[in-house]
Amino acid sequence: MEIDENENPNANPNATTSPPDSIAQIAPVEPPIPVAPTAILPPIAPIPRPLAHLPPVRPPNGDAAKATNKDADSDEEGDDSGPEYEISEESRLFREKQEKAKQEFLMKQRAAALAVPTNDNSVRSRLRRLEEPVTLFGEKEMERRDRLRMLMARLDSDGQSDKLLKVLEEEEAAAANAAGIDDGSYEVEGEAVQYPFYTEGSMALLKARYEIAKDSVVKSAKRLARARRKRNDPDEDEDSEINWVLENAKTFSLDCSEIGDDRPLSGCSFSHDGNFLSTCSITGVAKVWSMPDVKLISSLKGHTERATDVTFSPTTNQIATASADRTAKLWDTKGTLLHTFKGHLDRLARVAFHPLGKYLGTTSFDKTWRLWDTETGDELLLQEGHSRSVYGIAFHPDGSLAASCGLDALARVWDLRTGRSILSLEGHVKPVLGVSFSPNGYHLATGGEDNTCRIWDLRKKRCLYTIPAHSNLISQIKFEPQDGYFLVTSSYDTTAKVWSARDFKPVKVLSGHEAKVTSVDVVGDGQSIATVSHDRTIKLWSSKNAEKDKGMDLD
Image 1 (cartoon, rainbow, N blue to C red):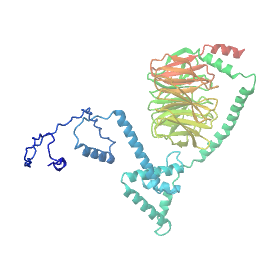
Image 2: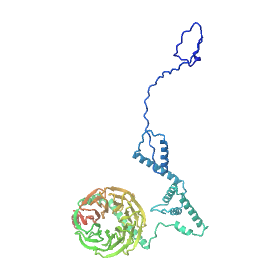
Image 3: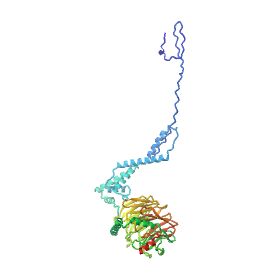
Image 4: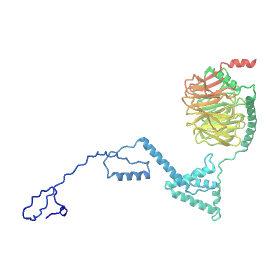
């Protein structure tokens, strides 16, 4: 009898069977002893290395950062294997920058969804209720509305919705009052809404503006006619003239050195005819010297604090001084006090005459500059506009413009005929201390604490050239007053330097002072330069060709 192997799937294939006997008997089938099959081992695969543990992303502080860190901690609780790696500083800064850009985008998205009034009076009213500035200097209607939109979005994101709701309720109540529903208290609110951002000037200022405009038209016509003649006249060779002036400037040398005071000197100025030189010091005393022998003529005593600047009138021999006692004074060369100009709330920095000689500009640390009438001593104009102290001031040769600079690293150009700020010159990274107009009428030079002198083109309204002039701050800058073919800078690095106004390359270094050079001035014909310093000395630098030129003029 055959046994089908399929009937016993548990049969051991390795078991041996005995030969059958003569009598066929069916032996009881014993359960087979299980034998472990020999397993065929597969080839050993390479053991992979564990992946490096990725550190959790750590965004900037905030709710989003807390939530992210919390999720990361919960993910790491069950996996303590693997090392932690610190994120690099570069990656952290990049992620912070990315998160900041994301927040700004979300802020703009939130601001776009807000309802902002389109009426400028309503925008001003809401800004006032939010205790924000109603208007910023030079801000237009659309810029003001955008500022309000971003302010509302910021309040909303900071969770100050209650403040916004309160402002909206006040506006609704004001509108109801204006409609006549309430007791008529809207008049006060109406006055607040129609807030003027200007101050009405006096009749004296109006007359001064008329006079300045009338005189500037005549002077500008003469300047333009002269420029056209130089351009079109074949006998006029401007390049040769500039080359001659620059070659003459290369011969500047120390002609005279005189002790000016017992304390450091702070300012100097030549008279319009070059016959006098005035200086001032931190003792509060200004002095008048004869030229070119630098002999003392008179002392101007009257300030109770240190004197910060001195200047001569462009038409007469009157002298103006500025002081830390918050006043400016007008003198004659004999030392007689003519006027005292009071009104500034903080110490004065610089002082400058208008080309007409009838008006005086002063700058102060009270963030304003003012225009005074030298004949009456009255204040004509109080001009704000700088966010920090105003330091330097200069007037255009035509008399139509004024330039101011200050510790806010800005220089501003003002139209004296209208009172408007027509140009804001941004480029310096530190306070601007000196400003000067070129006689050509369209170049303006500024210098400051960033050790650079910047040349601005008023026609293109941009910086034309940046001169890395000194190794320390620039205290004063002056163009040669006749043609503006060169300019001079003084610095706290104990030197003064002469620069070409054509390509702004250095022409001459005037070194001789032992301390900070605080001020510089150029005589009318460009043949002499005066510098004063904290070493208490006045130094007069003259061209070697000056005497030859005078002889040629006489012939």
